[in-house]
Amino acid sequence: NLNIWSKSDIRDFIINSLNEHHIRLNQVAIDRLVYVSKGNVGFCLMALLPIFDDKDVSLIINPIRIFENYFDNYKKISPIDDEKNLEVLGILSFFKFIDINNTQLIKKINDIWGIDFSENSETIKDLSKYELLEVDEDTIQISDDLLSTYVFYKTFISYAVCFPNRPL
Image (cartoon, rainbow, N blue to C red; front, side, top):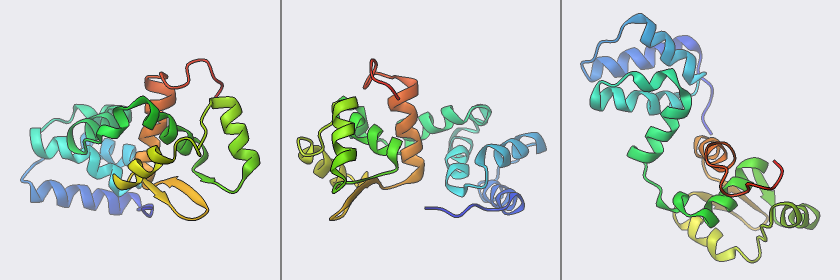
């Protein structure tokens, strides 16, 4: 998990990063980058990558496009494209983490969303191999907060293919 940076620290990071790449942006674009990053330097870097590569500032208007661009073009994660994997990841993004010893929660997830974690042990192992999940003796969680946010968006909002008739 990343610490939240102050606006001035994010602004300095942006300006220094742009200078390193010999790119100049106007103050409005820099202000927008500071605003959309909300102090998250990882997200800020995700927004800067297309600027570094293609001088494309169009994505900074919409944080969702920043996520989509990053995960589609920079960090291709093919397991996310599989619906079964996306269902497991989506549930984990919804709950932040799952205590696998909490039988009441596991039963509720199965009853409501049809996800049985014991039947998905291979899926969980595979996602863990890709370092998308952190699995220990008692808990399962998505390994990265930015990835978790993107998975939530992709699972429940953008495509809504995984659970079209189930409540959120």
